[in-house]
Length: 502
Ligand SMILES: [Zn+2]
Image (cartoon, rainbow, N blue to C red):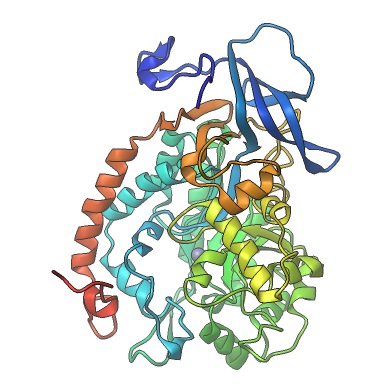
């Protein structure tokens, strides 16, 4: 978009390129003026027309509707621009999620209530190798930046590779190394069985603790650790209690996949005599530190016919939910509902979990699915889902300097070009963003006061090379799908292509 005065279009165009890596030197004092600014005042986002934002170093110094005088190292003037805070993705699996594309859509099994966890995920995971996972992580850096995610909460494995990629790409991240006391699998495509580890998963927790100590505070404080005991049905009370104690000691959050599949809900009811949420409450680990992934199948969900107090328990505990609407909608499943959880007082955040790793997709699907679930167009408004990937996750992470544009906040900023076919006409910027924006509308991205993208061009990541690398890796992965499936089926048997070959 133009005219982003003096904004480098590419590393080589920078007037003061840093010789060693060829990236633009970040100016110390920047004035950004946009036609529309989503600024933060008196506890809420507000719409400021023709606003100016002053960035000093890596923080916002001033937000104003008045003319700003003074000397600046860089002036960015975007009369047609929409300036918003960077978005926070609270549930990502960057080493594997890109491979969901072209594989998991349109297939599923009624006997597993359409969950992809029993058959599709194990087949894919067994076919991955470290190089394929690194290709997915590199691709994710481009995908996240391009679609406006500036902070990502990453779950799973390959933590050191992820930390290195995040450091290079300039993003902000909370990263965990997954561990558990059991693995689930199906041996016959009908039942799920659990293989419990003799060591109870404790060595995995120790490795996760070492990882957190190693990466926490890296990249000038942009990288943080977190603890990821993978799944509520795969942990023991001891593993959870020790995780909670260590996380408290280190001041880090914990995330746990919970109530994400009907078979998992039934497993917990049969094994423990209570819902997954009731069981976690009984273990004493539900607190403001705990971020539960998904939490779709709670008491009151129409697929369960199981009345109870799950939402009240969650609300009283202060635990939060990372809601990933799209990955479930694609399987014919929806939360009932985002607004009902919010009304109950549950702290609601959004995540991506799958492809596309885009918070635009996350906000849009969370809002629409809630309206459908509640049969009410007023539910899960643009502001509510925008809050769920800005202010709410910032509060969950204990960071009142993220997810907002206010004096003192980190300079994690997005400038959207409002002149494209997706965003015109613009009267209500949040509605246009949530219901219509595309990643291509995003023009400039700043994280920690540093430009990561200008004029639609990524400055720290080679997007074309990342896409090509992912394609090469995916072709290798697809050819290897089979051994991880209980019946040894190849990719075309598990996921038949939509079109017959020519
Ligand atoms: Zn997940």
